[in-house]
Amino acid sequence: MTTETETEPNDLRNLIEGARVVLWDFDGPVCRLFAGHSAERVARDLVEWLEGQGLHGLLAESERESLDPHAVLRAVDRRHPGSDLVAELEQRLTQEELKAAASARPTPYADPLVRTWTAVGARLAITTNNSPQVVKEYLASRGLLECFAPHVYGRTQELRHLKPHPHCVHRALNATGAAPSTALMIGDTPSDYQAARAAGVPFLGYARNERKNKVLRDAGAETIVDSLEPVLKLVRESGQA
Image (cartoon, rainbow, N blue to C red):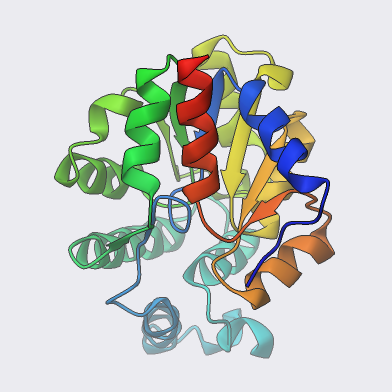
């Protein structure tokens, strides 16, 4: 599969050369968090737990059938913002993410890209809807935490701030002192793209298959890669310039 047009290699180069701060979504660009621990099953477990609490009617049918645990979490928070119920549900999701982190699969070329971008002087941050505790544990297991710390911005108890809200992107920009135009966000979902756009940050889409590519394209993303290898190559070249 290829996602490049004749003009996109220059677009990619321009994005990389203009990036002083690189904001990474976690699940997708850095690793496949649920590679060995199904996100769909986690979503079903959250729904079943709610039903076990006598809260079957809390979710619409489409929400009960969601394959995304964050969608379930957001749905409950919309109806009971800041409640103990939301806090319990969020903690259950965090525990599932911690289990998943043990079998997470590194995204090809992500580890060397992180190290190379750091080596050539870029500052890196994580901007994710996952638990920051989970992110830190995974990065530490790969020897990558120092490349990002202390800039790991993940899910908080304020669930209305989950992407596509740009809250985590703004936190990263403010903490690093970066102007939006000097940053770059790498993400694999429409919510990543929408958060970056809302914050005025250039966006690079990562799509590991045709379906994800189409979803990103339909959302409006223009520069998309199906592998981080060309990004790594360009970063290495920029470090030699």
